[in-house]
Image (cartoon, rainbow, N blue to C red; front, side, top):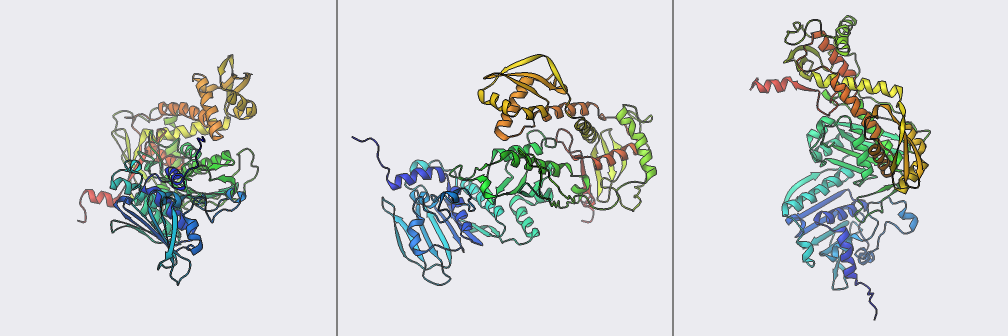
Length: 612
């Protein structure tokens, strides 16, 4: 007797639903994506009881023909791909042809549609054990409405896994937010239990797009965000990246889109973490809304039924492009950019010399406002003369611990009558903070944190100019690895040379470490090599060695910077402020802490109830 049975259509659909339909939010994602694929410019979503009782999605898209209505509720039926070549060049959000059939197998689904501005329209419902679809006339404007009632009514075990109404609606609302960020040209309207939650109109201008991002991510995000738009190697990255000081305790404000598709990808996460490596406080997460556009043929979206994951044909090029673009953006932030947010516009010439993920990116960056921000030549000379003692370990002209610094002077404008972004020093507080006055009001600077960043960046620049200095091991170290790792070392020997590692294969699963960077001679080299190999195999690149070197330089910079209770003269304080304005990443110390903060006159007035 045969033991292999052909599954019934309903059971097969319910198995598929287990992959696609996790909760009400999963249903909304599939239906909204179908609406956007249909060319809708307005999508209305009505929810009851967190989506368990009712989910209704209505759009003004192209609609579905009468004869296609039964097929629309069938498995593996779609209008978006026809041949195998289409699957390798998917330009739509949906393409699997499973969503509606899966949803209808675990709910009571009704679909109404019309392809004409006038006419009766049609209604489709699936009934019976074999899910046969009945089609009947029904009034409906051009577009499609899908109603999903009583989710998981016929699968009680699945229904038990649902959370409270508030929790389920929270997940569902997050889906609408993400989708509204993916398509600025579409209006989204969300109602829950008869109450309007979101009403987002289509956006046509940059200002309207920024307003939508602020509405979804919060005004504070946009107030602390830098805009990026850059192209290279056939890739375009644009969107908004929050300053490191606007970090989060969890990764709940990270939106990344590939050709308009919401994705969660390890390669992307790794590249972003690398870009923020030097400026983010330990345990904090960056915030961003970023869009990557590339040829659909070089990215595989058919990796998982939920379509949240993608696979890039040349992951190393994508990783390097993301890292370098974001790293440069964050490095170019100066105090004036944080005082008055400006837009970063980058226009790139076609990249050349691309090989193995390396590329040259040519950009014109306009981040800093025009105008002189320097004191007079006489002031510069005085400041640098006094400030040089901070780097030589000398004391500041008799003003050491406990001594009152020279008296503050009125804030002097520079030659063009403008005041530098961080202003001019007024005094020092408790040997820890510098108080300065600028055009906006009061500036407070953490003296040690600021000097630590300046010293650290100078040490990094010096080392980058010299390259990675290496030394051979007196006694080479042997380490056991997998055959895959040993093969990788054989095939990419030049990569390890550039990292300062001299590796040699000594057997099928054995490597010999013969040379290492001098600065890492006291580190756990074997573990470092394993971490580097892991990164290279998984992401196509590794920053482990540079990260270890930077950690050592950071420690050296910390010990070599101004300590608390060190009294500075006014010229020394001003010189420190000018250095901060010229130093990359000067808004954060080596450990990610902020180095300075601004208090505007309005904020100071509120403290003293002025004008109230």
